Image (cartoon, rainbow, N blue to C red; front, side, top):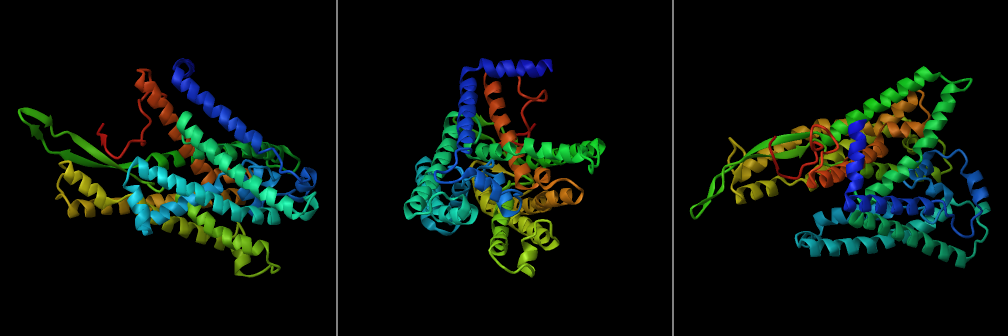
Length: 442
């Protein structure tokens, strides 16, 4: 405890770090306040009555907006249109030569891609806003249903999404951590106290299982979090050898031993987001269909066998797909060859690329299966008696986002501490697993 308090004092004593943390907290507070401002022309009481019970598709979407979705706030659509636009731009980077060229232009190319992403966000929000109003705001909750109200509400929702996007960018530039990820994480964490309180009330109620079962649930949650941290941090170190280089009479490189840290889960949370986006399709169809039976309805059941089986398979498949487009063994082999590096026992060039591809495929399989299991873990928690509101924190996108964002933010704080010769956040030194492409072997 003494070391922890000293670490907090060290963090507060660094003026730049203190300013960044305060800026981040202030912008997050603005985001949370905005999530409670209801759209003009909507009866909040009637809307709350219509959304009573939650769950289903609306409950899942509400999770990522911190409750703004079901409250019909000015931030109802949150940052999700921007995330969708970013995913589309990433996929276009594979298929469209113009985007590929921009990706290779460095900072100027990145700025152009960001600008296109913002324009695409406006287009996506423009399509989603009227659909959201029609599907999530019942007629009895609308105080005005004129064309002017619809137009102004669509503009407000679009502006709200752009403002949230701006908040995320300001956090990234002037705060600590990745702003977009922090906004999503804050939205998820916002529902945790209420969900936990419901679980406590249910466990201690007349028909509850008692505090012992609640304690077991909390222990199980900690185990799942620890396993998720291990998945996010796990790397396979491929050893490298760099040849000695001499410039004139000076030795430029002394043949240092280094390594490539290939992450077991190089794809991060993106496979679950991709798979979840596709699984929303049967949910939408079932929501607006009069038929109460059939395969589509089975797929719309979060706790159903077919939904979770297909969801699991898609997460595994998308893990391989996203790893393939984000990690390029050929590029890595070319960079090594250009810099005079090689994997001991493997010829430079194509042989190195094949070797790295083989290693990556082998470590991605257990990572993909583990990621798939984490994705469907909330369903097993529900089957074990955990309430739906609390079960979503036992796995899936919410848990992976929280773990990944917290680790990334702590890593940035630790970098500030170590740069100013303070002890890091952990006694053993740097937080493991957050190394860049090439790192010194420990």
